[in-house]
Image (cartoon, rainbow, N blue to C red; front, side):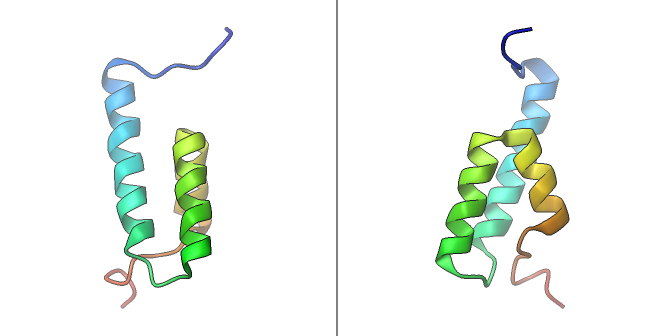
Amino acid sequence: MDHMTYTGLGGLIVLVLDLWALISVLGATTSTGKKLVWVLLILVLPVLGFFLWLLAGPRSSSAAA
């Protein structure tokens, strides 16, 4: 297995989850530098970046209640 590729339903699920994570990161009240790091991490490593964001990423301002 040379490269891990996402196709079909699995690829669509990864895309939707990453878009959700990106929107949440951009809506967070953290610094621009931290947002940039999270966005790059999610874009470069879609699955791992999503799970790292889910565990340790900034929360959107609407979720902070």
